[in-house]
Image (cartoon, rainbow, N blue to C red; front, side):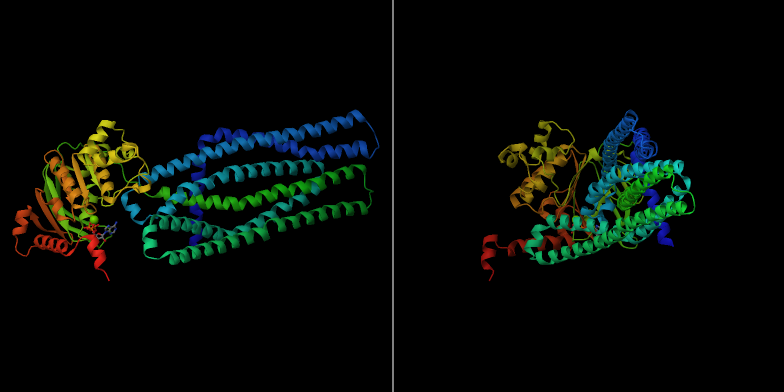
Length: 603
Ligand code: ATP
Ligand code: MG
């Protein structure tokens, strides 16, 4: 029974999450319960007034008009008051629910922002998005539909059972049999539908993920002519989702309404039978019993309604719990621990001591790396693909945790530097330039609140100022999603400007020149050289010309440093790795004819 136990734990955690979200609303919730109880009480009054009319006026044929008008007026007022109270509470609870959703959604998003980079190695964007949007929304269902309807129904049920007990407790006991019968049906329903609900939710999230992924990768999909395969994969997921939903709906359709409607009829029969038996066994049906019978018949019709409502809400509850459990699983992911340290970056000198690192245990990526980068120096890192260059940068950026003591900045452990101090002192130009769907200005600023002058100075330093000014609205031109309207080289220049805007002490570049033409590369090279002495630069470069002027070039090979030295020194190593890399690139450059000729030369 292990899976059940696990599910129980999940359920408890999900409930805890929902309660936590609603905690600030508790006083409101309590007040709503009182008003709902009053509404239910007023509602339960109806049949009692009917019974009074039958017993005191109808059967004795007593046409006491003022008294009858009083009864009628009482019933009317009670009905109106009950409706008004119920409507008011529904509005309140809806407000409560929306505030709770807002709170949960903000906390989930905030949490995602603080997750360690390693989480995103295995995260699927679409699923994450679905957690933040759909799953948190399901929580609203819980408050508006489930909580409101359930509370309303339970209170109404209790009120009616109480009134029936006061009228005739034996008959009430018969009606009360409905409760265990309904509970049994609900239990069966849960057994049958829970797996289908979980499955259909998971599949819906897959549908989201697939759609998001293919939109992001549209150029690749269309160029590879893979549209049909993607369509088929999407259709398969959709079909599985349909099947799961159908199972769920079947359980719904058979177990909820029809079974309960049948119970209703059976109960009516039972009450009439008992009253008939009582009448047959001697005493003639007294006037009082007619009124009671009327009240019971109308209560039975009303009692099943809240019971049906309660059971119907179980499927909603089921879904909300599943959604809450998924949100909870995400919230349980450990956040990157905040560096409580107070260390500062002053000069920006980097030391790497005997650094070993593996993403997965037993599969080392870096082996015993040693490296000293004095402040203000320019170091280039080269090496074959997969040699660990980006990994080294990720560790220096604290995206992953390096073994203690292996990374130092200005002589202090990298973990001893405060978060804010670290992020403002370190700039990154990543391998894939990431642009927001915003203006050039906002992309350089990235919400850090720089002045226009600072932004433009950074753009000039990155040599991005020229092309930005040529856009139709200059710095305020929207760049489209992911900077779609810029060339890759231009995106890269914006990314460099963004990094420089923070006036970093240390600047990391990961293949910042791979996608730009030789002329633009020359510009970036100038920009980097101009930073010499002011900013420590560590640049990974595929294009060796970018780091030709570096103070030191480090050649990585399978996670180890193979060679190091200036360009001239490395070129002097006979049959050295660097020398061969340079020769290879020169050969490539010679063999690659200009693009227009190349296209023409193809058969
Ligand atoms: P490239 O020039 O292609 O960018 P690189 O030198 O930057 O290559 P890294 O990205 O550092 O190479 O990767 C080094 C090794 O670590 C590779 O074998 C890669 O498969 C592995 N690796 C990289 N990132 C991860 C990750 N997040 N999880 C597991 N393994 C990873
Ligand atoms: Mg890389």
